[in-house]
Length: 273
Image 1: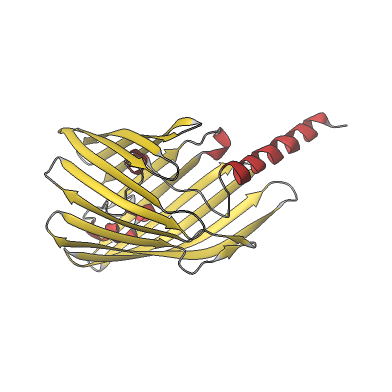
Image 2: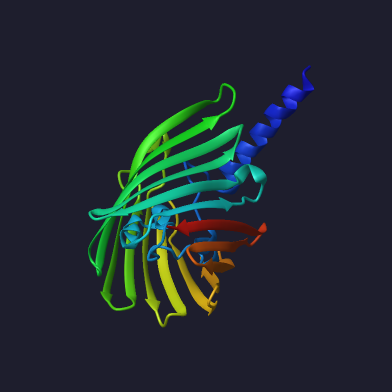
């Protein structure tokens, strides 16, 4: 018997079962929580930066500079690591953006590539739309699957310093290889109390899961350093993080807590030209 081959296949089966059972896996069912979003319990639907490409594309419409970024989100085991890159190009007619993320490892992985467009109709309202190509692959003869989906978001500032955001991921309820791709609704508000304090609250609803309620805060400690914290329900999850800002460089480290498995880190680095 080839014990090395047997061991590799057994390891693959265990990892896949862990993904399916422990975390309720369905096709492309992981959430992207890059550094700042992870630190604020993913209350990111009203944020306006390059990472809006993953949370609410409407926020891209407010970008003024060409921006690039990369993130790494650690899993509870290394086979669950998630990483990605993003690029945004503001133009006179709107912002064009592209993103790519990779989840898993050589034996099991999921990839998503996205192309987004966002436009502001005034400083008080913006709309964003993104088309996604999804690919899932399991090594050996287990197969692979592909799908296309889209997501749409809006962002409004009805009064100064108060923001309302709404976003829907996969409103068409597309499927991949017979597996459901989650349809997720996000609604949130935030208020900028001063140039130092932003408070955000929101709710998230997967059609097949209970609603999640969340709140987060971003506090500018000193000129180059900011602090973040958040809390979410179903299950209860605490998070915190720190951001570093110098010239056009932004870096964030966020830590998200699982009641049983502990904290996992997320890192981001972005640059605006």
